Length: 243
Picture 1: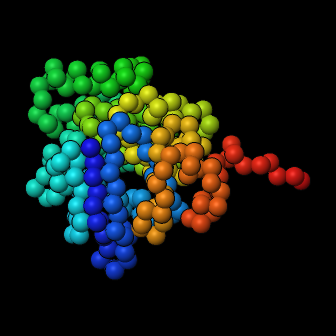
Picture 2 (picture 1 turned 90 degrees about the horizontal axis):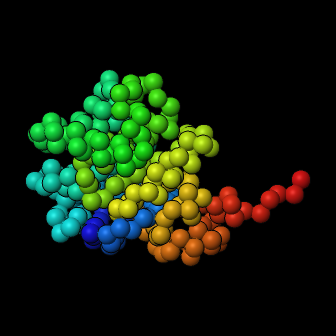
Picture 3 (picture 1 turned 45 degrees about the vertical axis):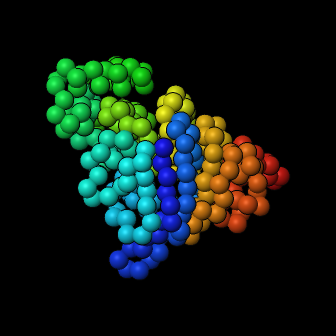
């Protein structure tokens, strides 16, 4: 499904963001990509979807190598939901935001509507179809951003901190939405409780390298392992402090 081999990446200022990453991700996996700030999560996402140019190593999505000549096809296969939904929502109606990608593919308006309706129905948000995105709550905007990616029928979706800055109810709604998506998902997150809830596998990045890769329980319940990467146990597993 997605294979990364001997991937290295340095920014123009010389900062080595990615160091010799080798990963194989199978179809249908739900993966939490975790690590402290600066660990390389966002840098890896940018390389996967071609925002940053690969200069050393390779990334393949269903045997198609990521590169300048393949970006259009790669972005049909891989979608990304950004941390700030306002970076993705810019139309005056929810319908038009979700329709934007399919329209850029020059689909007929009938095909576009089918894509939009399917995405709205899959996420249970048909009631938002004609709303103005800028008047929606943070949680609603997140789900609309997910719908805009779903409408492109991707094989893989990358999520950048999908539960950040949400109140508890909106967070739970987004988690339920992510859990309902039965496709390959890679979720960059600091929300380890969410990862424990909905992910099958955890990959820890530390200083740009893969520090650990395993099942959710093997990784997220190992306090010593997490502490080496400046991470803590999920809140639900932490002992209450005695005052």
